[in-house]
Image 1 (cartoon, rainbow, N blue to C red):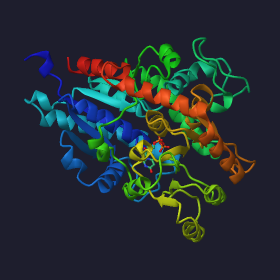
Image 2: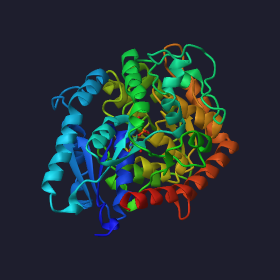
Image 3: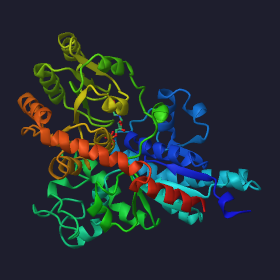
Image 4: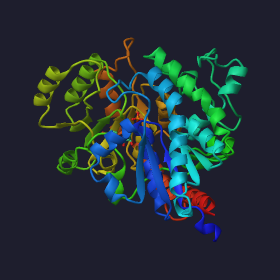
Length: 462
Ligand code: UDP
């Protein structure tokens, strides 16, 4: 048998969250395009949500098989409790994964094409790489955030050793943090495990993040959802980093991205009715939670700006009930505002009517905006979102940040002033168009990311 025929089956595993499932599913589609069989493993809870929100996903994309393993919590147990979730995943999932791999091995005895011979795992679920290594399966890591974030993360042991952070991840100095002469210094409040509003979550984040340098040793390459031209200096300090992004799928596969909520496509018709570059798109990703006060303030900001806006208000966006206020608000803004529970975000950002994007700076949202040349207004909440804001505002200069008051609330005057500034900035628009062009080139024919991805797949199936 030729070596080409040997590898036909890859197992792909994301961490159980929207911002991880989406890019890894996109990568799976790219790999499947090369005729490689992909088994995509979610936790049972995420699997159920994805299948409910995307009817037909399983049938239509037969080239990708979806499999679920338990995360150790009861079906109706609260998964937002980060400590409980992290403990449970680490306790039960390595065993379940090993069982799954052994089961496939048994079932595919005598049929080499069915055997799983490569594993691609989210580095934030790096325990997968340990399991694969123990079982003698080849593997690669995947990094779902910026390469700059990865560079900082891989330097955690050194940062502790040098007394820059303590072993709980807290910055010991207020100075800029330098990890390499080839990389611009990081701000001490851009530490990518920061959760300013939730110390317990920060502790769990740091626990998980500080395990990543160890996990990364179980794989020689790390596929990154970024592109070389965007983060050249960060790429240069991580020898195994392989930028293959921005991961995009063709429009015909948009509905197969694995949203955890049903996408409300009525907003696309609504956008069709608006002039070019007139609508403010407002969305804060899959996990951000607002205080009621922040919610009211943002609603009043959008009302008072008076421009058309499309706002994603997930049913679990706020930490308390806001229905009464929300209903009255919707009445008042009905002529120029549209609110949906979950949008087909990539189509929204690609729509000519969208003028700017008020975002929490999640990495996927950031890349989606860059790829579509949409200027950003930044309000990060936790984790790598702070570093992404600095990249957006200070390095690439494609957006502006908003500040909050002492209660952590961004006030309406601030939102209005900055939105108008973003919309009026020729410099920001020009930078957006330049980066959009670069992003498209990197994944187009002969582009750096496409070459990296093709090379990776070629090596994998060799
Ligand atoms: N997203 C979406 N519809 C929405 C809001 C978000 O499809 O209404 C998608 C968005 O396109 C992105 C992902 O959800 O791919 C959010 O990932 P990101 O890294 O931006 O933020 P996170 O949810 O991880 O905080």
